[in-house]
Image (tube, rainbow, N blue to C red):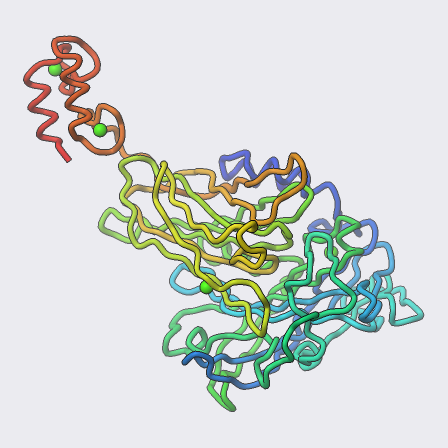
Length: 466
Ligand SMILES: [Ca+2]
Ligand SMILES: [Ca+2]
Ligand SMILES: [Ca+2]
Ligand SMILES: [Ca+2]
């Protein structure tokens, strides 16, 4: 497993994810090998069904609500704790929906998380050594939660109480939260416009479910806890589109990991925060004509509690950046996280998108666990390998990094303009001053390469002015 990760990192031409992978593979042998992992190890074995609940118009938008079923498996070597609330030794299960459309892989819906109670001892994932009680999921056993059970509003808890890096949350859930609104409250909410077939020609859709569990995290087995399955959008009936699951469930993969199989230019870097959790950073760069490339980035926080508050990509001098964009997904139903969009700026050799700081508000708009945000821009330079940078939201302990690097594609530096003497991407008075300072000399200011700085160079510089 480790070898595979290292090779894929090298293929991307950077050491950024190589460094992260060393810690990523320290635990969780079952995450992507074939061998059983050590300790309890929960995964989503299947997403078997979907329930539709209808819609409510919120601020002029038709918000549709759903739930998906999840069958979990314990593929580890120890029984998995499954004690009902107010005991917190049970899984917390957020559900998500994503769309790939026009080259952009984005999250279009999220739910609160179901708090698990009582494990059955079934055999979806193979031979099961059952636990005699429902307070454990036996070794090798599976437990089914139907979509209607996962959509039961009373069983859904706010994500804001959950630390996905440690798998912990309070036993007594939803403190201070409002009761669930009719039809859509706490459930997997998707804006009808994001599903409408007339508005989404060619779009592909994905459901994803994840189990957050402290015993699984403690055993080092938390990185294989998300699985996904595709779905199609059918007719509008009873207030919401009928959604139909297609294909099989891809186990132990977050939905974003489907992207490279659907877009030959897409890469997904694995970025681990020491003593915290994992981000996936997806990226594409497409030529869109007229000497312009579109750069797309999707950051999915799998289980980092520190979360992300900013993202930046290098932009060399002389690159023209246009069409800058950002997309987040709204928290809802009383979740206190801010919905304020991040802002962007091009400065200091980079483009950066950023939200608020943790010190300004602990409820600032950050990329929290099981959540994906998108970033994009157009540039007049072809792609090359660069390091994007994710700035973390919550402070870490002493010596903890404040940011982590992600191997992505970004615009390359424009060819050197011989008249741009200071290399800042523009030919202006600063360059002319440098030329004049070296009048009659060699080197700096010898724009035409004649061996001397003279009037011919001034002419060449003025011709390149701007
Ligand atoms: Ca696991
Ligand atoms: Ca927003
Ligand atoms: Ca210049
Ligand atoms: Ca010259």
